[in-house]
Length: 207
Length: 304
Image (cartoon, rainbow over all chains, first blue to last red; front, side, top):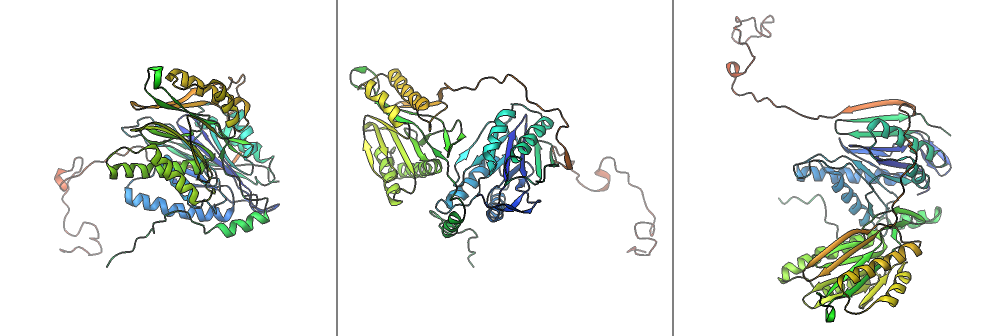
């Protein structure tokens, strides 16, 4: 897990979610790339982050792309964040005795349905073997996870508007990764609301 | 021609990454730590005898999940559903307790349907112990299994290696000693329901406050032959205080270099058009002389 470095954080706001990651890819102390994005979209309103071993990031991303495409073809509808989380959890537990070195973070908005007209924004995270945690505030993972816990616990508050959520999650990520040697080298934030997704590349310390 | 299924059904575990992970574990500081539920879980049988109440089982659990020294989940659910009248508390590796209880729950439902009668607690216990023994303790699930069936209230513990115990009161997890201390001093046979819940809550609180691996809230489940009551967050003795300052940042504090906005389709209005020409509203039909329509100048009109 400490080979390539990288961290991801997700937060819940008022009818919106935000997910952010750093951009570093390294080989222990040596930095190799500063454009290694770890957050990927599933569909318009569902994004997930995969911090950890870089080779498993690619493997898992392709594996999930296959599983989600099969789901879309069989069900003829888009997958919801909760179902995607369970799909990801089962995928990880299959490899219980030889796991992927990834601690994923999922963030998304559920489309309103007649049975559930006001769904809450959804974030979740899990350990390397798929134990799901569904926090009501924020989810962190990666080499800077300990620092992210600390900063997020201090800065997060409920019902932040999208622009305020952007500031909070950006400051959480930037300040936490600045204290972690294996994360950093740039950052990307995605803010997901019901009518648009804003992606911003942050100006970060490059040391 | 029979098409081959794209996805081959994978039953059981996939060991293909094991060799690679051993190698990586050697090269780096070791394999990543899985979330464990440090935990205090308890169960108690109450009622019957001269209490005047229906006999039943009362289960309790704390709600902290740890990943090493860090609290991964402050409010996780450790009382898992098996059948409408059977519940299972899980300690040990969190993913293992979650998946093993889900698996046995599905198998119990199928079993009940094929047998035409509700599943018994001993059935659940046997399925769990045979599964866990097969994996020789590597599936780290330590469980307190309780429920009510035709034979009455039953309470068991199942250890990860596959051993089971049948007892009137049980505790498991890192906080089990703290909880057992409470039980050994205060347990009586044939308690009333309120007494049993109070005792269970006290035992869990003892684990929460004295054991480092347990914390947050108390969850309780009460099962009698009339039904199951799930009391999620029955007690919350560790609520966070209100923050005295507001830590919102001024908008524009964070500098960004690139922005991409992806607007999503929010609502679509579909106007249906039926028929051609005259039936469409807002469309004027103008006669066009031959050779003057589209492509007319080049002489591409069909009827010229």
